Image (cartoon, rainbow, N blue to C red; front, side, top):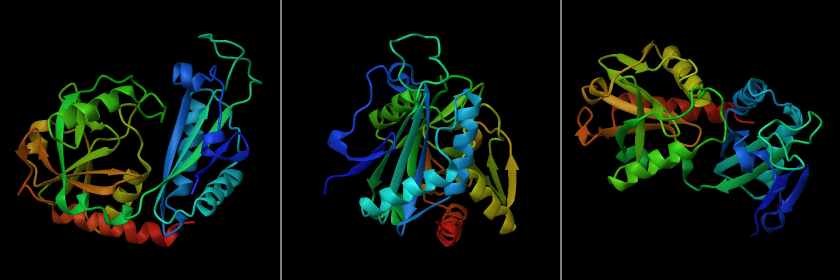
Length: 286
């Protein structure tokens, strides 16, 4: 089946979708994005993603070219047209295409570019990696300073992912001034004793939608949560480690820089949080 995508108000076969070569997302990474998971044909945490999208657009001085209600309808229609049961929907909004390439922003009335497409991922909720656990390496964080804005500037995270693969690992945790910021596409956590530890919100990390939900569920389950920076040495000495993201939910980390974390196997805290997150999020899916 040919995948149907959404481009600037139209639903099109993917091989007919086009945007201008002058689009600022292509030329300057001048755009923002969101990824929403689909389970059982329904959207997980859509409201959170819509709110963060609005914040990202505002932080970059971009307009809001589509209402939340219309955006929800587009998501639902793409799920229907592409018969997605488990998978993801990628959304990107850019500042649009000016008449020519110029570092200065185009006129404010320049139409913005909106693109959405689906990715079918059967078995997303039951990923074997949840039973196996991730192996990560640590790398220097060389990204720009506004990581709280979900921009399409993803070159260094992609480089980090490839650094990890080159060492036979799954991902990289980025380190700045001695402390872990986050993974290449996820928020990072450790567990020591009865305490879940994760870096506090700031411009240094993405304000993860899954992060917010998981921490809320953890507190509701009477788990102790401490939001602060931690080092790689602390992580290696932890009882457990895990990451969260919209596409992996809660995923255990079993090795850091070749050293096993805890027993070297997925821990009970990560397993329980993954179970709670999936159960509660599916209940509230739209």
